[in-house]
Length: 468
Image 1 (tube, one colour):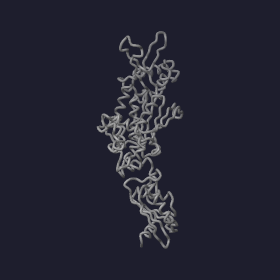
Image 2 (tube, one colour):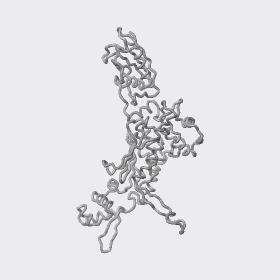
Image 3 (cartoon, helix red, strand yellow):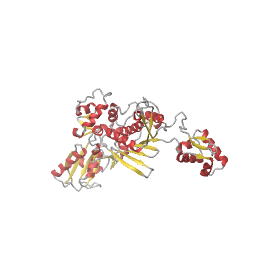
Image 4 (cartoon, helix red, strand yellow):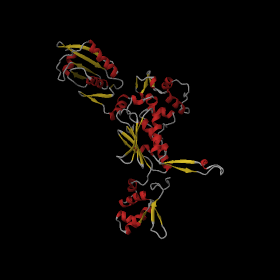
């Protein structure tokens, strides 16, 4: 029995697929073979193994070979073989050293079916099965796609940490030294870091940023594109449009100097450096294999949420992120390395700790980190007196309602408390005294007027830290 007959009798399986005629489904099957264990595609055979014959000529065969090479970037073994006087086009491919992509999609072979690898599993598939990170994959990109201005800016940033950061360094030499050219080919990391238009190659490698009044009311909506450095700058500029700032003036150095000479300090709702750090972390650590996902930044009146595709790597936990000097396990090593050289990122697991310290010093709650297998988020909140925090402090629903009232109105009295909550006088007095004891309310006795209660301007979770 010849090999072709054996394959047909064997039927479709992990490494054999039948097609009556050539089409894109044949390309997908071949891609799945390359990404699994290799396999053979037979053209001119029905699913049940009935041979109907392939009717193409030498020219059609060459067209198919060209498609496979150009789209899948693999070299197939192609031949026409006879089975009971019927020609069958036999296409064989070997397992690849990297994943084959078919028109931007990745496939794997499971049993006798060709299945697309889900975006949320793609990164783990690359790293665990092939030991490959997204930013190290090279393709047929050209130096013309690299922006010299982005290179120049990076060289200025990297003067202190990059010994070979010379102004006259050629683009090609610099990319090679940064390991962004491999085997003579430019990597995805190079395009994302220094490309003129990275989104032409990676459509979801962008930031979707918006200003929200509530969960469904969008005030402003922006898509931030360009290379990673440009995206960081654009996000920071947009933060400064979306959040509020106030100014503090120090004393003039000399009495004779004009008012404009007084030292003016900008006090933003959140520390800009912490927001910037969170954006950089999202760009560097996101899972770029999730081709349909993008970084999202939602700015509300009282909090900011930054979410990126891809969960924590290497079994890390949210609790570990809060520890100083925790492990640093970047998902995209080349991106992280370049940002480190540019003094935009530290390598020693200090990013989250720095965000925590910046928020503490700014007088706002520590950022909250949330992790999921497919995403990670950081939430900044400028309000210590959220319902969740107040309930955690042991407040009743009545007391939480009163705090919410004072946040909006600025002050509450015993009478207003009773009208708001329905409590009797004795209960209202006990509740208000308890709020004072817990360091949330401050009692202000007014001569000839009802006693007023206002919010204490400090963090009830940590009385030593006072918000600005």
